[in-house]
Length: 452
Image 1 (tube, rainbow, N blue to C red):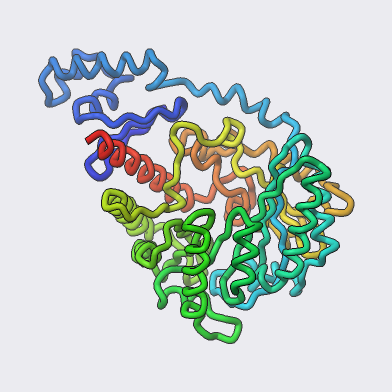
Image 2 (image 1 turned 180 degrees about the vertical axis):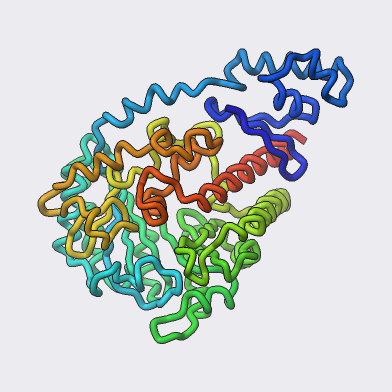
């Protein structure tokens, strides 16, 4: 499968199954579009280029095909049965350290941190049992990941510190290494939390939606007060203390700020170098939810961000945009490319009282409870259904050029909108395709800059 597109003056050709990417001239671009249906003599009648240029381009395309860099077959289809049958170990947990929050974000999927239940904080006992469960179910895997999530984790940060200390003890006993992360809205962040995080946390996610007026409207406190001015200086200090590495400022854009490139640039102008801006996921009846008619503007915003990344890179003031970070030379292993994030198999979420769910977005949906940290996994059937889910069980993914980049998308969103984890959330698919195109264009532009 070959995908061709034009972006920012570049003619880009992706060979989907090999992963090869080519930046070509107009003649070659048009020859490739006709290559499988038309012979070179017929092309000479159809295309407005000198015959010798068409012949030369055709020969180059033929050579790329012979090298396995264009029009390659999808050999991953044969590998998928091995992926589905492989023994899966648990490598990551999302610890819901606090089902409570001091913000009242208008788009919160967790219902102000309560997840369809009551407010609750994880105990030290449950947190330690969760790490014991992870070690016991991690097989020979050395590196394990634990994300402290909420609600707002800083509401229970004393227990966070005790769980981390326990994890360091387990590392010595079991030859494991824990990579701890946490997500925060910033209200309670202080020097002690910053110092502890810089010592113990491999990554920190700081939630801020961009411009003050956007952030304060969507992310007020529980008492209805604005939060931007409280958190911004803390986040700036936090990012600088981490030397602009191993963190993200993470925003959410909604129908209210479809001009979200301005929020990204606002954060970059403040000095943040690691930026993520996620599209909100909301049912159509929600006033903030993104709709199909919004996609052209969203695509234009992604184009604007891509161009600005190139400009700022050339000017020596770069920033990373999470959705444009694609590794064309390495990247995820084949199994990961086919089956996605590992929710329900390699990755599980833990509630404050120790129940296990496929991921944080399924917490509170009782039909998806797979067990608990004390007794282990009791619903292997649920885990098996997630293990079997991949880009070939999703009809919408089978012929999509981006399938090996998004790996089938989010199972929780598929279930939320279609009631089936083997479906795909269409709006997200459209945005992912656009982001992949922008990401590859950026690489082409920066490669050209280095060559010149």
